[in-house]
Image (cartoon, rainbow, N blue to C red; front, side, top):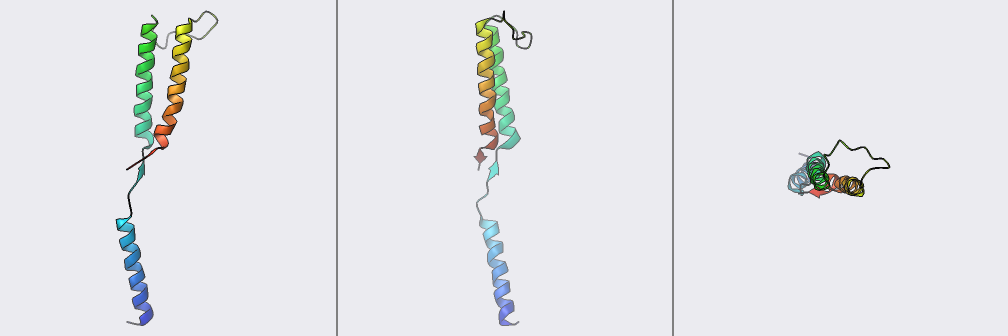
Length: 91
């Protein structure tokens, strides 16, 4: 084998070893996002129940109780925070 061939073989071997030994990392992605959204939904259902209403049956209007508006606002904030869970790296 020529000297250039040995260097190329060594380079391929070193790169292969580095790829195998490189730290593995995956994005949390849809699973973490879905879990977070489910948690938000559970909390807003409890919030509505505490306010004496059923989630999904109240339309936001002038006569909407302040407690329901607060539940909706908290739900939106929670859902927005789930974006971070969807993009956070996990080992």
